[in-house]
Image (cartoon, rainbow, N blue to C red; front, top):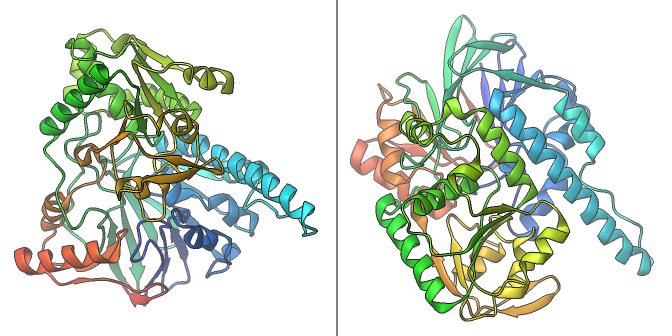
Length: 467
């Protein structure tokens, strides 16, 4: 019979990876994500794959975020040569994100090797290289939403809009199993129905087995209007305090939402800051991809943008300043007040945001805004949990800035939205919770039982089940 193997994002948020094996011998990998967070979790990226990469017939990707795609170049470096399926927009975003990741892997290995050589130790190799990534990108096969496609013998995939980021998909897999068709539905990362640009996640009714993400399985997000009001108040207070506003943000998805909201504030005369800096080369390039796929935006927002005759991001938010070069980025730090600085990375474990921490985090007039989830083991999580100092660029920096967490900006569905989405399935298919910290999964598991009378399973790493 057909089998499903749970290899990643099991009782944790990152490292998405599942293997589907059909009775006829087809082997399809669903996701190939990078482990992110604590050092011991990131070390898992170097472990051997729990399957032979060359034996796979196809790889199916739900969306472009690295916790779903970040090990694809390593998979190719280890021998995979088959197709990689994703939506059209995801294929474009994957190029952006994977090439950036390869550059980081190479630079990190170069830096570590310098220190190792001085200690008489052998140099290290990067997790993967730009060349590995270019070979990976050549294997992409874009698919539209809503059109079934056979990705391997007896295995058919249909993508449905997940509303998480541009190109994100709910994955419907139909697997032929001894003259029967078994239907597996993977939620991917389901979007927050309050996301300003994305459509609401599509609802499906039929499945034999459902994999449900549970990142926010323990709670609902704050009302988006209340969150926007809070952001507006933070910006006004920062203006009165005379400091800068730092916003660590993921380059794809969160940044575009923030620019949309700040543009709305500007249009309404509610933005007191003098300048908004987008200090992320990846986010700047992602903006261009979002612009090309604007027809996939929510219809209400399409109408608003069209009514204002917006052709470019700069028309929507005229005080936006993009700083792609290192020199332009460093120049921002000469500004001590009146600026909003949006920079990566979203969980503050690297990227340009840490340089802005060095110049602003110790200032009591600075305001630090976290617009989303901070995983365990990250610098962002340490600050959210109340750390008085954090290690930044090999030195300790005091956390004197005023810290704000705005959960209403999450690009993930909250608990009630997860319940609503899964409630559309008829006949209670077998349900497994993935992509969440264990305690959050357990809360969602209990709520599913109490409200929907539905038994949800929490798989163990490496567990194998029959479809």
